[in-house]
Image (tube, rainbow, N blue to C red; front, top):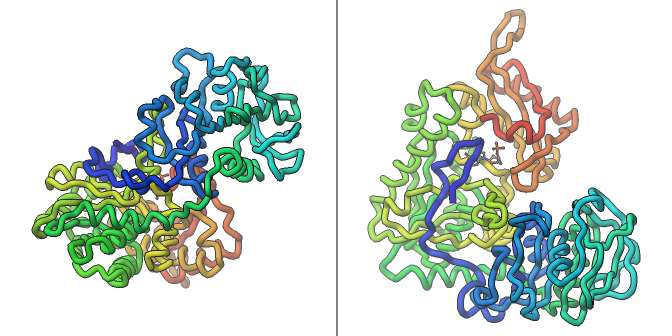
Length: 543
Ligand code: XMP
């Protein structure tokens, strides 16, 4: 898988995974109940998968054209969900499920495009266009349905569709209609096939989770007992079974929750046969080096290879202004330094990496990567170069699930709840050349922003809050003298996954406090500005 951030092919990203470790996909996973989500390219597919897990059923996203023969590879599948998608069911080349899979007798739940597919595949009538509904719609539940058990007769639902099912297939009954009289839900209870035109997975459908729960428990008979921490023992066992007695694993950590949790799991599995490499590229946040080293010790990881490569990185970045070039240099050098450190450890056979589920699931229906955020240590080409196999214990978990696992493993909350931080570190928050002076300003200003957000209780309400330093100067007055100083911009955003983001309206007293502290405490800054643009059109980081 290749990732792009800001249009640059990232050297950090992994490709060609050798070893696959999946919680619940091994042969002895008989008891683990699963729901498979057939992915028709909808923007909410990952949300559906997350919601299933939140209500207690392990879920996996699978290609839309999965065959009944392939189904057996997935263990104890209790139900299928057909996701939404951008196409029209009658359109040429529109993705269709395997008909035999639909008729396999498994409970099926169609959502939006999935609902229209059920309409079309079982002989109903789907109307293209002209029946569009977008946004919040009120729907009326008519008659009795297991899907709406214990729900009020009128609920709010989020719609986003151009096509609609005009006539349900034979054997199906309509169980809900929208205020504009469009079929909002239908079912064939005997065959256990249910579908809804609205999105149960988004928060704008307040009772959507109840509908999903009703399907998973009431229709599919799932136990709803899966919890993210259930996978810890399984992940630990898989690593222990995979890595032989005389083999070692090397794991790069950045201080982020993914790489630290990966290290914690490997440590549990193979103890001192884990070697952790932690490179300080001189672009870390204030106190980050100490925090990472302290956390590794707390996890009882003994083989810590700490490399202070800051001088090497800063020298390589000297005179470089172009953001893409900066990223390339950092990526390349990072691999070189890592390679050198790994080569010194004998008998290493595996590289452990903190890849998580959204990093690797690509939509088969659209060919679009559903998430592009990657960890710094997804170092492309490195495993092959070093002749190492890859271990990715977290590869089936979502970020919030990793956080739960991390908590259960004893990682400090300062690591677990830390805002995402890009692999190239503060280099993407410094405009133009990365100089010692601008780095110092950036580091101090970032620390102040984080500290004040924490103090005001807003740290956990945002995706990221940080400061960037511009290359240009602003004229200031200090005492009676004119002085010229740097401009720092503060930015805070909310986001679900970093793909899009909204600028966060920081309360004015907090803006004021941060601004005063930065100009007073950080030498060389005379102006603080506040970024009020969302993504798109701007990206989150400066460059
Ligand atoms: P942008 O700035 O592209 O960032 O809107 C989206 C999210 O990704 C993080 N980010 C990176 N993470 N390596 C990373 O590991 C990178 O090169 C990189 N660039 C941006 C960013 O912090 C935000 O959360």
